[in-house]
Amino acid sequence: MTRDDFDLYCKNLKATTNVIQWGNASVWKVGGKIFAICSNWGPGEQQKISFKCNDLSYSILIEQDGIIPAPYLARAKWVQLENEGAMADEDIRAYIEEAWKIISAKLTKTVKKELGLLDQN
Image (cartoon, rainbow, N blue to C red; front, side, top):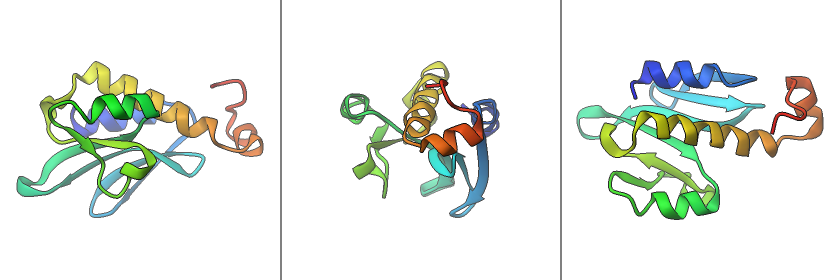
């Protein structure tokens, strides 16, 4: 999944916002809370995609080749795809949508109402 594809997919999820921070990382949020990140860093500045997971997905995914606990975010059950071939694009989209659902479900009722997210999760 290219960064452009990543950004387009995240943009089409309801009530999302995007900021560029942490050295040109594309950071996607819902209700001000991060659910997915696409960054370029490390040797050769490879693209890395990170997202929030539920406990079971986290446990399964970190056992897969090319997927690691996300630096700085692993304690909150985030994973990072280390290379382009670590996961199929269709699966990345499904996990990003699930990350959006996990984060949006944790928003307060007031914030959900402001964002038009009541009864969305």
